[in-house]
Length: 173
Image (spheres, rainbow, N blue to C red):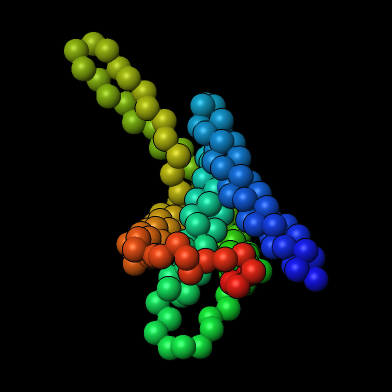
C-alpha cells in the first residue's frame, strides 16, 4: 500500500514539474515571437504566450509555497493535509481564469501597432511597438500578475524558516 502511495506522490510531483516546464516553454515561444517584425498577430501571440507563461510558472510556484506555509503555520495540534493534487487543482483553476481573461482581451482589445519616429540630426529611427486599442485590459492583467508575484514573495518570506523535518512524502501528500 505504501509503495502505491509513493508512486502516486511521485507522479503528482512529476506533473507539477511538467507544469512548470510547460510554462517555461511558453515563455521561450514568447521570446521567439519577440524577435519577429511586429504585426498585430505577432503582438497578440506575444501577449498570449507571455502572460500564460507567467501564470503557469509563478502560479505553480506560489501555490507550492502556499502549501508549505499552511503546513508550518499550523498552530493547532490538528494535522493539516494539503495534497499535491490540491496544489495542482488550484494552479489549474488560476490558469483557467487567466485563459478566460486572455480570451476576453483577445475579443475586445484589438491589437494595434504604434509607430514612433525619432529624428536626430538628419537620421530618423523608426520604432514599431505593440499596443492595444483599449489598454485597460492589459493593465489589469499586469496588476493581477503583480499581485500574484507579491503573494508568492510574501509566502517565500513567511516560509524561509521552515524546519526540514516537518516535511515527509508520506505525511503530507
